[in-house]
Amino acid sequence: MAKIFQVSVRGALTRVVEPLARRLLAVGVTPNAVTVTGTIGCVVGALGFGARGHLVAGALIVTFFALTDMLDGTMARLRGQGSSRFGAFLDSSMDRVSDGAVFGSVTYLLAVRGDHAGVAAALLCLVLGQLVSYVKARAEGLGMTCNVGVAERTERLITVGVGGLLTGLGLGWALPASLWLLAALSLVTVGQRIAHVYRQAELGADA
Figure 1 (tube, rainbow, N blue to C red):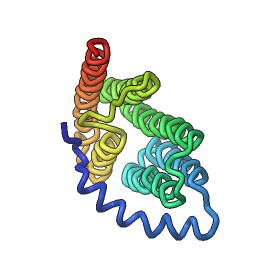
Figure 2: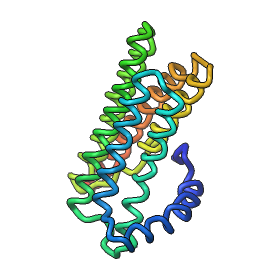
Figure 3: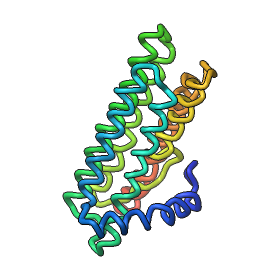
Figure 4: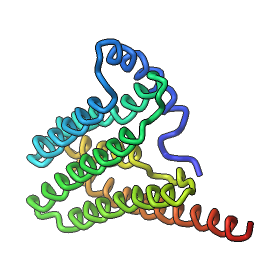
């Protein structure tokens, strides 16, 4: 099933990111350094701004640094290495840190504002988002593929980012609504990935 953030859009962003990747490599910056820097930026945007109610600034900062998720991979490809084993490990680990900071800050902000339904939605997003990633990692560890689902990490960050941005601009309902939408999409994605792995496992058993 096609992802929300279409492949064509990803391709367009890659064409924008690639010149920057080349420049960074030329001055000696490594993909792993970009990965860590992106994580630090996301954490600062989420905890330093978003959790304090500065949703517009927080959303913009997190979105900017989330683009490093494409940048480090592009840099590794341009170096002719693909993604090294440690680079892949570091990238996945730092993604979990960033996701925890983003959804943790949203949960804290909604709790301070007394929006208990919003808190529930944010916690669901946090748990389901981690499960989406875990299912893929576990499947790949067993030698199967699992690159399916309507809401991968990019889609999750865009959805909550748009909700935070709109709420920061005065639409108070936008952030909770985006969280409930994201929780539903994440649950669907978990189901899609489990079904995809099940089909592979059954085919393997019948072979």
